[in-house]
Length: 279
Ligand SMILES: C[S@@+](CC[C@H](N)C(=O)[O-])C[C@H]1O[C@@H](n2cnc3c(N)ncnc32)[C@H](O)[C@@H]1O
Image (cartoon, rainbow, N blue to C red; front, side):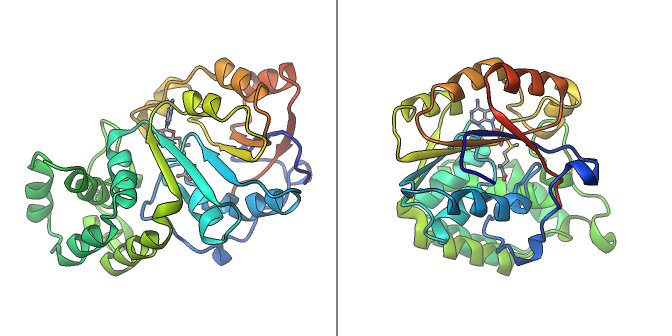
């Protein structure tokens, strides 16, 4: 794969002869404290490959739709860039990233380890009105780990059965999650987190040749209803996103669903496309 400007599409059911082979994600370190719908752990090997072809090496990675942030975290832990600009609109998700940047990873780790998760304790905790960003962050982690599919959007609810009928406990691994926060404190100073519109931040960096962009927007597939089910912020002006991309001086890589609307936009703006299967 070359380091040219690329729009990447990945359909759920790509035909094997027209798609790149799915990658083995078992080797990818799980760095994100989230289990996030649309999470891109499976994309990490392709991302590394893309970066390995670049010369000179980029200094900054901009991730305008950060979500669980696995791509930025990988880039920082593996010293692929010096700084990651992570952008997210969701207030709950943002509270977690803000806490990490504010130096509250240790506090979160301690809260997670000290929390005895039962249905009652969970409902009691989620009923509280958070007074600080880190309290909100703790609630977000609890919801992310006990709601169906990690989905925080309205309409989501507590896991009923989960893995092995363990219900809300099935995705609650306090040691693992706490350790991820402890690790995050090592790279927190390299994260520039912004609760903002990703498109605005892309424009702020559009003239920088030492910046690259990993763009993973809420998709178009399944229409608005599907997007609404996964994210609180699911509406996006896709045409505008493509126009902003066209003006970027640095390279970018964008993942999208294999929808006609997207392919038409990619062709119109002269972007290369590759078909990938998610692992
Ligand atoms: C497909 S998910 C990103 C998943 C992420 N790559 C991961 O690995 O977890 C898209 C994210 O964009 C966020 N979002 C939607 N519109 C946004 C906007 N205009 N600016 C910033 N974030 C936005 C959503 O809240 C959601 O978290």
